[in-house]
Image (cartoon, rainbow over all chains, first blue to last red):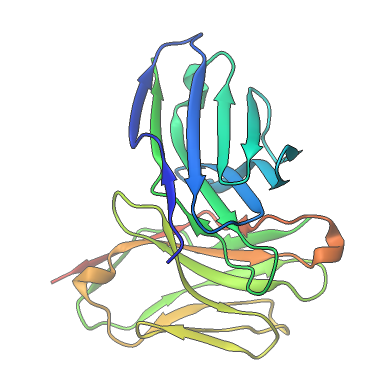
Length: 113
Length: 115
């Protein structure tokens, strides 16, 4: 089975801090995604990476950056955390061959005080 | 652009009741359609999918039929259980030639099943 892991389940940070959220997948998938989940808004795409060192902005990239130095790892960076970035962050991965299903990690609930 | 609209929740049912969660979409051409489920404290899991018109996806007693004429993909289950309590997300995967490679999600519908 595909496994997508995220570095933390819960995280509390202060306004202005730099925050790193890590995601690792073990199935050699080319595509990886970062979403944020907020009540009533569903999942919104922050950034997408289609291969190592390649990235595309999603629907809400402002205030975020990403890094993909290795195929299995996709990091989301909040350069200067703000309270409106308090949310659930979900990482996903997908193979570009065959089925187009996305596999999700358990999520990181980030609170910015 | 692409969009997915789901019925608002929460949906509260008694055990063994019939479930319908409505989902309609707007997209170019023939997207693939998905239902994901999120149990409390967990990430999303694929529940079922359909890749072309009139396809029926099914899993764990849940079913959904891809209806191109009504642009819908409603989720149904004949007899719900308490363990089905979760948030359900409808999503679409656009055609590759649109340039977008990520899923578009609905806002989610919370299902609460009471014993």
